[in-house]
Image (cartoon, rainbow, N blue to C red; front, side, top):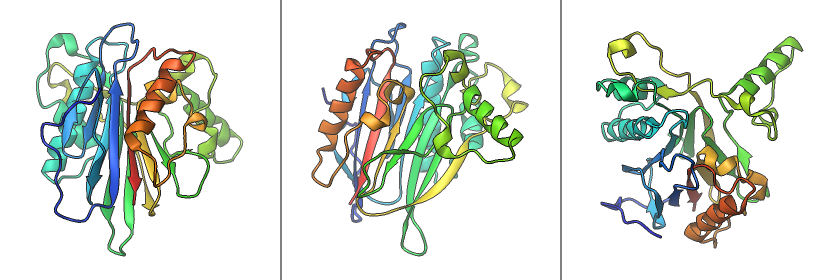
Length: 285
């Protein structure tokens, strides 16, 4: 099922990539869609939908936010996060965890929404002064960004989940006098309690945000080449279908069909789509 955009982003400059997004409610036990996403110039929170494949030019921004399911009002936090991103992006301001934190809590929220929490994974791309495409990878919590460099046979995770397990990995490495590698993080098959999120955005119902700290987000930059792909997704995707089971993407791949196949993999998994799922795929030309 495809849903239409209120207004498609039209670029007068030459497109450098194509992108497409998919979102679905899944079999979430609370029957709520707590995922939200920002797609180029607008935010969305839909039960089911597949975007049309859209050409994009630099600069651009793509993001997903996942409401933490422990609160049945967390869909309001994820929505607030992507709405804040739209405002910051339109105003050409720096988008970071601190600026998002300030914006989402400038509004006094209903008391029943106090404590609603959400994660973030975001990529912004722009042309650097030396002519290269720079992608800034930003995340809070356990939503992730994956990279498939052209010619490689394995998706690479660029983000380290903010959870108890990864903190223990850092602690162990420090005690051993070594540095943990990115491949050491985000392990599979561990006890569920170790996946407890340690960083997230939280709604406040009063002026307490003035003294509260913004979540500690992580950010890095990578150089993008022609043929590279990025995937921005919530844990309803990567928890149920690890990236080693994802298809590769070539210049001929139909991005919409690729995402629909990924959604089908989530439903066919042992977890049977127990969570909402959202993913945005971008391929550089």
